[in-house]
View 1 (cartoon, one colour):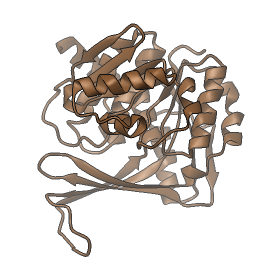
View 2: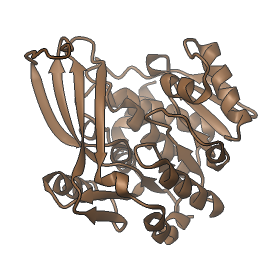
View 3: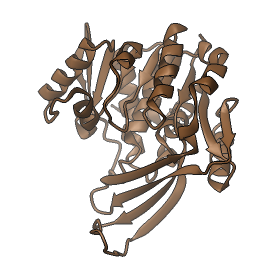
Length: 308
């Protein structure tokens, strides 16, 4: 495996963010207070987060031959992300509508994955030499689940540590759990996957234990402002969140965490230290608007860790 080399397989969509102090009802038109457009998609955001956090990153996905696809390709050039396995298609590139509450920074998102949802297991198989050279392989659930499971299974068979961020939450086939060295759900995703209500730290521990029992080797339940619960056969610890300033936009926080977490694991940090690093990346990202644009650079993360 390559030192500090992270491969991310996932989605690219263009984010269309609308700032408002109220969600309109069906049939209602409501005037918002702001608008932003930029690169997004969970996989793409995590690739950017990992690159800015200090890793060499390759991204496996598919985009259209359109303006949104051009935005994706420019993003990866700017961030020095390898795109040898970024496939092109005549289908339109995906998009996400993100509604951000103007007062509390909470968000509601509708994603249409578009071109990236055409990524096939056969195309992922072409990236086998790339995956084999990685120190970590990261996937999410904005691709077809059979493609996600194929990528995880391929990386696992090659001895590459696998991270599944099971977002957006959905029921998963039992066969996928054993392919996950690390799984990183938030409360909602943990609840969807396990069928257990996750409202407290104790609930999160129960959900994590249920995932361990199904074959996952390490579970990190991200808990927003409460931090992240870490569970494995030998570890049970709550890692606090970082306060890096006023919270502006929480949209990309989970992606920031996963990108930073992957980098720390690729560098050989232990589980708790890697979670702490991921929490620091996320803590900075929420103080800025947007998803990929909000991801901090390595020196900022190191400075926050030193202050803490």
